[in-house]
Length: 151
Image (cartoon, rainbow, N blue to C red):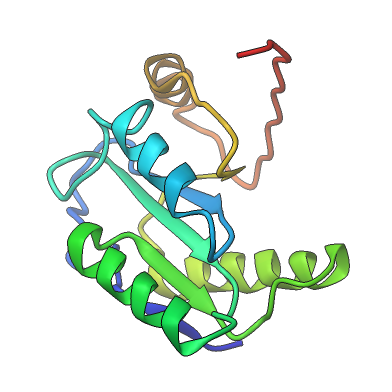
């Protein structure tokens, strides 16, 4: 499955103790949700100097206008990758995330940890980083946490 967008993992510092890649499942139309994530829970953990890299993974743009908006947003933030898989159903959405994980394996091999969330999620980044710092010998492991609180 082909993907397009900036290679956020290019030149990733291999000396970083616990590199974390956050793969955010987003819709091509969710520019506002991406803006809110960048301004809130990602604001101190986003950028080339951070040990955290973020990718907003979107499906195939439905129109040329949408593609142009995504390209402009990516030029500004450098954190959007899209696949040829359209966003139409739950089944297709699963294919989109398989494509996203495939992208991680090909483009971000240095990621020690990968967190997959959707663009409606708020992550407690300090707690997450403390957790992964304690996972020194973790290999081939999947963790899951869900905390339901109304915003």
